[in-house]
Image 1 (tube, chains in turn cyan, yellow):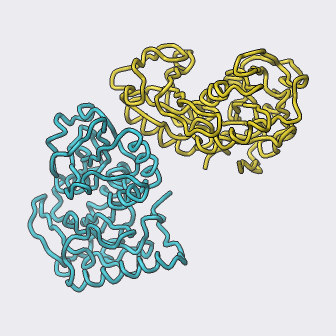
Image 2 (cartoon, one colour):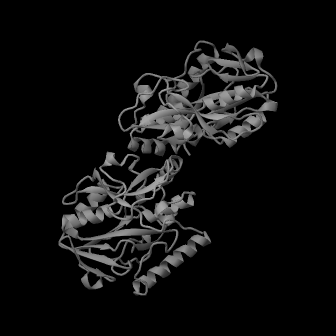
Image 3 (cartoon, chains in turn blue, orange):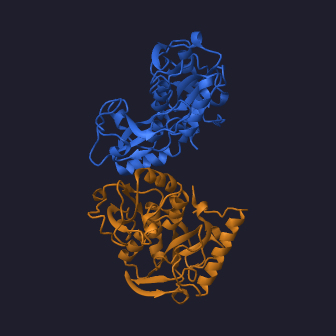
Length: 274
Length: 274
């Protein structure tokens, strides 16, 4: 939660922040309402969950108890739609993500591009780290990511690793999987160790049955993975976990970003390291 | 090589340094000439290699090219038996390790406890990080090491991973193996990533055949490992590598510590982190 904006003097970094602000401006005005995947390189993008205050306290505790699937980067004060300045200047959760999903009693009720009309005075918004940040670090570290090579979505799996419950929030950890040769897996662990606020190190590698995955070729989401000889599957806790868990808790209303349509901040991924 | 002694004000740390100095005094006087395993907890112990100057330049380059098996922590100036003060005050390589092996033309010629009589004006001593340091960090991180549980030596294997040659120094990397469940292996990688000067992260895990090890139950040294269900073998580059490679290069004279009889420094293991 202490994600202070470094006073960077690096011109590239300042250019990146400027581009992120401009893109957020276009999202705010409705000019851009599509995917943010691959946009604003170098910048932190956040998963969103918005809940009424009387549900938010348990959810905050849930995040604190489960930092790998739910790495809380920033949250708003009740009723205040503006995120603290630690992640950027005047970031308005009502307008600054391209698309939102509205769940009522755990059921998808609407997909909208602006929350202004349904904003409530008791809403609390949670911004959680997303795998884009550590994937960027892995690629910068010289590793190749199979789902990017293949132009597909990363495969997700429902594991038997139960999250630590808090109030109504409970359920299994959803995992994303990236195959690597063992020496690259070691390098990937080394790199992601530096990013505890974006899921951090993997939770498992190798034998999928150990974590309740019977068939690696049948992901819960995404296409069946392409695995080469001697590669081992490496599993990270995934930001889809809190999304599904919040839906299952069936609050009267809950709003999330639409997957792939994230909140772009003014923070650099390199500022997320420990 | 920039292992500055921190100006620690921690009493425990100062006590540890005092104990290390006292133990080194007993080694110097000949009072202690046995193993250093388990002695001077918290302190850096070093692998030693001593070579004539005209062999030392290639060996230094070999260390720099192969930092995982040969993590150079400190070295002496030619003919000067005293290590730089970065690792402790007045550490004399001629007297301060409990036992030395003398190799002439690559053949073990003698085992002695003091080098004063055979010291040469052109000798250069190399002090290399040792796995005791990272093993201490693994245990402090809550991990259990099987060979310690079993009271045996860690098993070593000759891999097919060739070191990068420098002059006459070349050959395969020798690996030590510690079995872990996958989540503990991830933790072990995370911890050892902080210790690049004591072998750093593992070089391999899982399938031993990938790195030229046909039968994990037949180590090159140590006893066959006890592996439990779902555990994977995790392999680190080992400080025995330079010892064997120096012997094979057959310099006219080469002196090493006797395995397990290390040079104890005034540096804390916690000061070895990046």
